[in-house]
Length: 540
Image: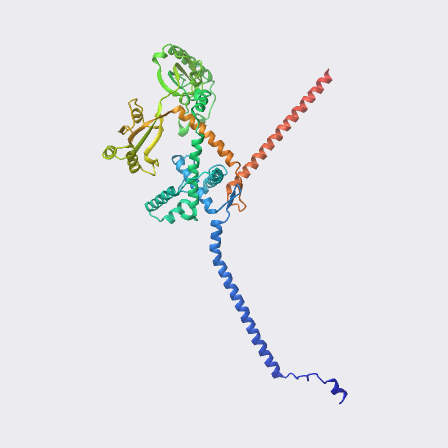
């Protein structure tokens, strides 16, 4: 065996690659590429399907996050978009309901987008209602925590069921579904189930606040002490008064100021009318002197000739004579003449009496109607059980619940200032007893009152002081319970926060500038004083 044969033993003979072999190999590679491209295509197709599925799936996910995710945080508590919208709608609706007749004076047009109308120089009405909503959220969450810590319980089941029935009735009257009506009331993401807890929280807290009010209601001793420290605000006075107006000249007299040349525009008022003559100081002084002489003469007969004013509280008395009338040293028969320089006149006054009005307020049940059916309503009641309970039912039947949301038509602690004169005259009669009824249609009114007398209540001064003290106590409780309101808004959802921050920064900058100016002035004064002392020493 040759060396060459030994060397090649065990090795595969080298294959000669022909043209045909290269063709077969190329076809094989093409098929492999086709299979690879098909696999890649399938993978890409699957990926596209996954992307589409994710996009479609993201709609409910995003909706879920909007509904349940954190929109803002108030005092550390997460608030969803649904919850915020609910409180925004409640806050704005309450405000509009309370100030409805005055909204045009405030510059708010409800027929236009409120987010484009300015509430203040920097805030829109939308911003303002957002701020109200946040304040309400902070109070509600703090009160809920306090109520639960105190162990307060209240079953809202019946009240919530009644709310649902009213919701259905309102939706039906509006010609829409409950679903759509809830969205109109509380926001686009609201549903009856989503806002249920917020509605129930409101009912729970109303009951809690009623309990707090009852617990904090001031006693008679506290009321008396408050009155003793501020009698003038609650006492009444009887007095007689006449007014003597100074007769100011309407054209120049010998006491007029020298005439200065004026342009035609200056001598004419609006639409070319001649401007009213403005008397000189000398002319005014002369007219007031004559008025004073007349007032002094009238003082002699004021006790018989003056116009009698009875049971007038401090707030309703002309400011010019208020201090004199409510002076503790005033006695019956005192007279005086008081100047009112602002309006160029004198008041001639005679003091008659000062006292604390003990007239009781009154509780009534009433049907208030604008139809001519008052007598028929009363006869219907008389034809039934004719009890206070049945009258309450009549009130609920005939009173417009949207205009008058008073259960059983019960109005408590009515005073002379809160009802028409004709109705007050009837209800304040000394012979009035529980169960008395009447129908009264006051003059110059289209309203008729069907009234049931329940009984007397506390005097107006007691009610006023009690409400003042209770309001102070509740405000103090709320301040202590709620504390400082902290709002976290990382997504910049609330524009008013940025506006308020800018206002505070501007105020701080202005204050710093003023402080700097004051410091500079003080430094200048100090330097002047120092120089003055130096000059004085040098002179000595």
